[in-house]
Length: 88
Image 1 (cartoon, one colour):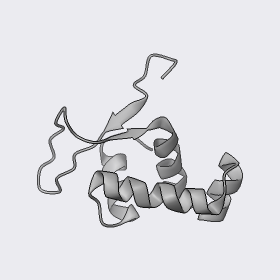
Image 2: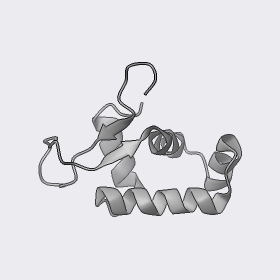
Image 3: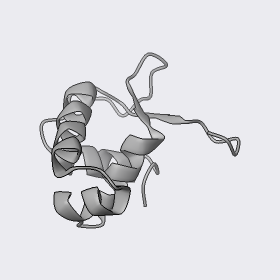
Image 4: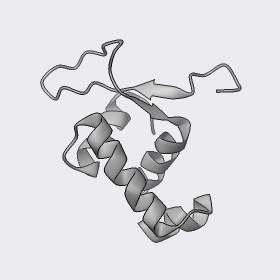
């Protein structure tokens, strides 16, 4: 990112190992924002309004993030991001 932070975040793709590998998938700042809003119990409609995007775009982001991370549920993705300090 612009302020010296990475513009992407690495998360462990494999459920059984809590180890970050350099070749792991990454989430963009934009995706991290969406995960944070999901963690804050926002609905797709609320997230879309807040980010000035369509609800369909938010749904697409959610699907892509699950596919990219190999997680089967948003709960899994959110809790993984939380445990790794990517969201609060």
